Length: 179
Image 1 (cartoon, helix red, strand yellow):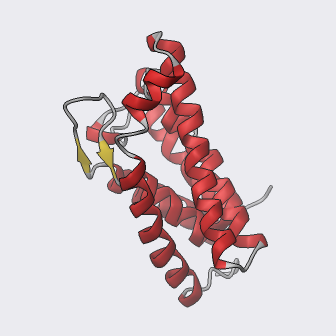
Image 2 (spheres, rainbow, N blue to C red):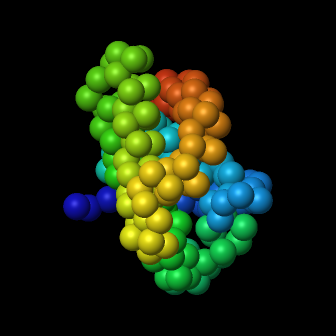
């Protein structure tokens, strides 16, 4: 897979945007998972860049955090974050952005595109909850109560915002692969 200079720049730009929006973080007293704009950023990335470039952008973000750059929520970084109790939520992001981008690329129905956002979010919840449960020893039910239930409503609002902004931007800006 050969990427043009413009595609590489777009991937780096969106990795930076994801990194910045991940810092908008509100720690919650009842869970180790902070409330962030990360889901919003990943959803917008998928809607604007599509499945391939979106996935590359998210992988760059994860790589930067994995090697120690403080790009994860609350300026955290490292393999300990990626493979710690809440790391599954981060590791589910490439699948989310791919699902969102695929939905946008293959379907024109607003309902199907929004459904791809929801399915992408569910994929993050599944990977995150399974990893959290495996590492902490909590049951799946306890992990859902602790790590998903407090965020589901707010995450749906983020998806509505991402849908509105992402589709609006993608209609107005052409990312023609030639510079």
